[in-house]
Length: 127
Image 1 (cartoon, one colour):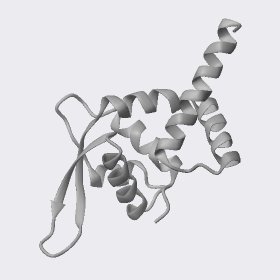
Image 2 (cartoon, rainbow, N blue to C red; image 1 turned 30 degrees about the horizontal axis):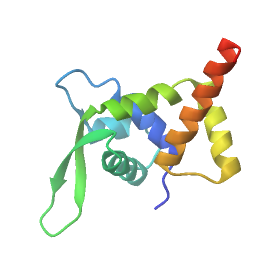
Image 3 (spheres, rainbow, N blue to C red; image 1 turned 30 degrees about the vertical axis):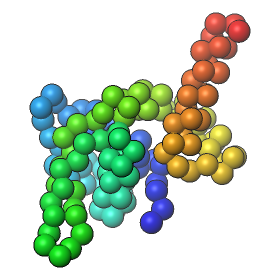
Image 4 (spheres, helix red, strand yellow; image 1 turned 180 degrees about the vertical axis):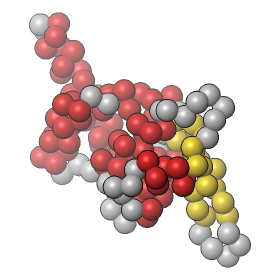
């Protein structure tokens, strides 16, 4: 399955709203992000969990695949990545760079975001 990087950003934006010691059920996430399929959201949540950006609670059906039950937290790394991609104009710049170099992975977008933010900081400081 292909990872939808816009879905990655939108999931992280929703997860940032989870209150301390709270949870966001997968059903709530599906309702909040109705523009994405359940498969896209499931896949995105699993990949963000594998990347260390989200803490997920799974339901393990006997003899079947694991299913996302809820999201319990966004990690420090998840916050760091989200803070770099939160602004829409910066996000569009990051996606533009990613498409030019053919990079579509979360780690590639993390590196691109860091580079874009660094360049913006340098330009603001006149360096």
